[in-house]
Structure formats: C-alpha cells, structure tokens
Length: 636
Image (cartoon, rainbow, N blue to C red; front, side):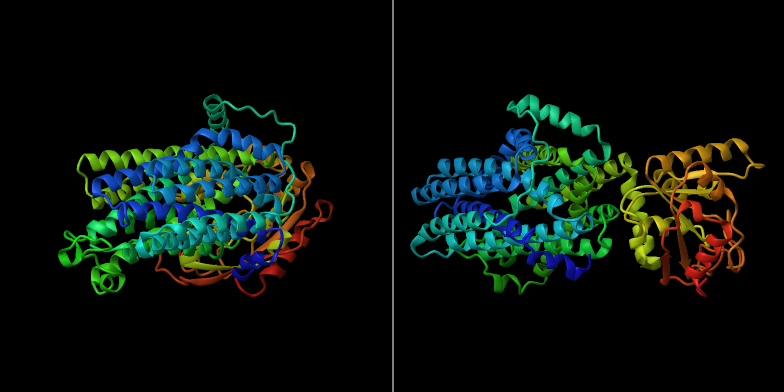
C-alpha cells in the first residue's frame, strides 16, 4: 500500500467504524487514568513525590492486572463468537463502568477510583484479542502493516488527547470541580457504543471451541501452546518488553515533569504529547519504510533507536529543576512557555519524541508478524497470549519502579536502567531469533547502499509453489531479491558464496541451499536437488540463478540445465526475474574481485523486474534466458 492508501482505509466501512470505536475506547481509558494521575500529582489530592509515585505505579498495575487474569478466557471468547457483536457488548459495559467512574470522581474516593481502574482493565482485556484479531478478517494481507500503523497512530493520538483532556479537566477546572470529567467519560462511552454498531460482521474463527474459565490453568495452557511457535512467541516477548519500557516511562513522567524539571501540569502533558506523537509518527513510517509488507528488519532499528535516545535522555536530565523550583499548579512550577525557554528542554523533548518514534518502528511489525504467522482459528488466542505477557511485563514494571523508588533510585537513573536493559533484552531476542537481525541487515542494504525499484511484483503468487529464475550479477543478488519479495524465498547458491563471512549468517538463517557442481561434490549436488524438490512440494518459493556463477563481464552466462532437471521431477511455474544496475557495484566482479576495490556506484538505483509466470511444460533454457535478458534490457 502507498502512504495514501493506508489512510484511504478510513473511508471504508470495513475499517472506519472499528477505528473510531477503538480510538474512543483508548481516549476514554486515558482520559480517566490521567485525570486520576493529575488528581494525585497536581490537583486537589496533590501528594508527596514518594506517595504520588507509588499510587501512580499502583494504578498502572491495577489497570493491567486484568489482562493477566482474564486474557486466556477472553481469547477463547474472541475465537468462538462473532466479533462485532462482542465489541457492542463490551462498549455497553464501558458505559456502565464510566457511570461508576463519574460517581467515584465526584466523591473523590481514591479506593473507588482504583477499583474502577480494575474494571476498565477488565473491559480492555476482553477488547484486546478482538482488536487485533478482527483486522486480518477485514483487511487484505498487504494492508495489514498500513492498517496496524493507522490503529497505532489512532491509539497514541487518543492517548495524547485523553492525556491532555484528563489533565486539563482536573488542573484547570474552576474551584477544583470534577463535574466536566464526569460528563466527558460518559459521553465518550456512549459515542463509542454508537460507532460500534456500524462495524461489519466478523465471523467466529473457531465456533466449535469449548470455552473454559480457569484463569491459572488456561493461562498456563495458552502460554505453553504459543511457546511452541518460536517466532510468534519471540515477537510477543518483544512487544511485552516494549510495554515494560513504555509503562516505566509513562508512570514516571508526572513526577519527572514536576520534581525533576520543575514544571506544572502543562509540562507533564507536553512530555506525553511528545511520546505519543513520536509513536504515531514511527507507526506511520513503518508502512512507508517496509514497502507495505511485514518487515521485521525494522525491529532491530527500533530497538537501537530506543536505547540511543534513552541514554541521551538520561544525560539531558538536569541535576536541579529548571529555575531551582519544584513544580506544582498553585506554586512556583513553570508553565509550558517558560519551560521551552530552556535549551535543555528542547533536547529532552527531542529525546522523548525519538524514543517514541523508534518505539513505533519496533512494535508495529511485531503485531503484523503475529497476525500473519498465526493460524486464523487461533489468532485471537495468540493475541491473548500477547496480552498476558504484556500484562506480566507491565506488572513487573510497576514492581520494579516501586522497588527502585524505595531504594532511593532517581527517575533519571530509571531511564538509564531502561535504556541499558533494552539493549541487553534486544540482543537476547535477536540471538534467539536471528531472522530479525538478518532482515535488518537486508533492509539497511536496500535503504542505504542501494535503492531498489520493483516492477511486476504482482506476478509473484501470494501462495503456492513457484521457481524464480534470476540473472546473477553480484554477491548480494539473493539479498536484493529476498528483501523485495513479500513471501519468504529459499535460494539455491554456489557453496563458496554460501560460506562467505557475514553473508553465511544471512544465507543460513534464510534457509538457503548450498550447491556444488556434480563433479566437484556429487553428494552436495544430490542433496541440494532433494532439498529443492522438498521446497516445491511444500508450496514455497525457490530462487535459482540458472547461470550457475556470477558474471565476469556484465553479460549473462549460458543457463545451465539444472532448472530443467528440477522441473522434470517437480513441476512448478517459473517466474523470470532480472536485476538491473548492479554491474560495477562493490559486490560485482567489474574491475577486480568483489569487495577488494574502491566502492563504486554507492547509493545507486537498482531495478528488479519480474516477468509473467511461465508454465513448467513451456520452459526451455533458451526461452527462459531470452526472457530474462529482455526484462533486464540494456542496464547491466
């Protein structure tokens, strides 16, 4: 999808009512939570830094605890029943909860407000599996990155608006009245229910499922089953770690704004605004940077950015509050205008925005990976497992924050802890699932050294076996072809290229098949053909370089008969592919061995032209070579 295309979804009934419904739900959650935070930190109940920080951490823990308790059950419900009906019932429950919340605000009862937070968390725990489970039913696979990006953008814009509204309703209300807050949360809940009635039907994924309610055993079963699917579970761990970091930052921003920066409620609001705008921007960038496909190579990039700018936030934090005063609403706290007069304030906001931006690049591909990898009938339960792990990590965040505060840790010290821990956790995840790092290397190659222009990508089938036949110009041909295709591709390559340092990690991780000439190593030759046949039998994509070697002069070598031999034993459509513009690059053999000469044609525009599939019975070596040469044209 194009950048324009993802926002075009907002005009379609299959997406727009759902988007509005989830946006209003996120808005209401954050309006309520931040009104409570403002009440504790800046409003009529203004508490000390230690007590306020502890209560804010407790409130965060109470909100997400139901995700841990009820996600296994809610995932079963979401898979068993029609989803639009479930959403309407959940939104009806929200109206009742918000009415109770209004009463709690009016009475000023902290225990009751905390109890309402638990009920809100319970409602959100049931909505979560439906939220991400319904998207693959209403969107095409190539729309998932864009759809998820718009949802994340809407969610964090709702967080931003809910934060601003919740904070301002408390801190700016005349005579400290909470009546406007009470009215807002009820009205928004009602509008959300009205919009939910327009969501199209989304059929039950597994209507025969036997629903069991046993929080402990079912949660254990859910997590244990999901752990069998390595990539899905590691994606869940990555998302959960993001929410550990996010919860830690968000829980500390109020006191950071008040006591570290010396600001009032407006400074707290602008910190959250910066974080939300950053995540929304990063989410939208995902669709553009990934070319509309699930690009997990963005995940390591996101992790790197979070750590770098998290470290800089620590170093940018002032030793004493700006102006030397602690913030408050009624006292000497700075307003937003005065805060922005300090040069260091801009550096802090810049860091917060970029932590959020790289967070968006980090999290959107992980959600899309779960949606595209999970079996449709178990998708909601996979999302539920994600919610369980998210809740666990967020509870751990609340506990960690509480313990560190009790031990006397500074807020800046906690930011340093998160940045360093993120680097360690990311390294651990990428070591367990090297596909993330492999895709990152490919993505960097295709967006720094070269810019690849794809033509005819629609000729590669969305499913089913096919053989890609490509000319062989350089040592990175496989990376460029594999990085451009939406589907995973298995490559056949000369074993000496397969064994190249660094490249071997990528090729091995991608499941490339090394091959040698029959006279050179007959055992490897026969093993390679067996693996190729197996790939075709499984309905996967197989890429072959029929020349058998990289060109020495820029022109194609004669195609070898191995592809014809493969088609004779395992027929499949053959898709001709031509690489353009790589001759003369650092990785080609022009003017000397590859990688052993001065770089040339860096930042070059590379063409990848894909022709129409040729039926197996119509393929001949001459016909195939002529077609690849035609697609390549004069650009070597």
